[in-house]
Image (cartoon, rainbow, N blue to C red):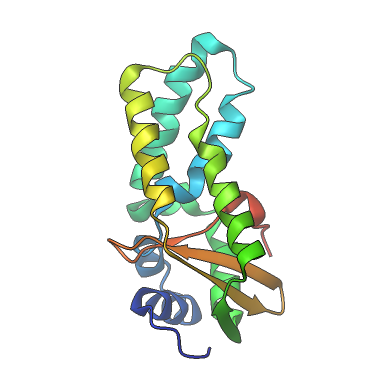
Length: 165
């Protein structure tokens, strides 16, 4: 992987290459990465059940860094992309815009949520807007855009764009 000034990305790639999924899981911003997928699914749920489903989904995303069961289906796709990345380069404006638009899909809360949940979603939307750097991981599986949360350095993926290898 070519040099990129993002220590957490290097840590994540190293962890993926040696199979340290526990360490890798802690380098990913799961709530931000999973929010668009969760809210898209919640939109199809009856309004009377949405608050309960969102509470469960947010709890699972919040705990994903320390819960192998919560990430067992998606983490292999992330591991494969990081471990096999041969080139990393800054996303071009179109790639960046597409990535941020996909993350922004999480800022449209469906009806039926509590005020606390709406506040939490607003907080996550603000964090999504703070994603500063976007890079492309080029690997045999294709290209994957990854974003960086500036305060934590954590990686952000659009989980719905990843398929299991």
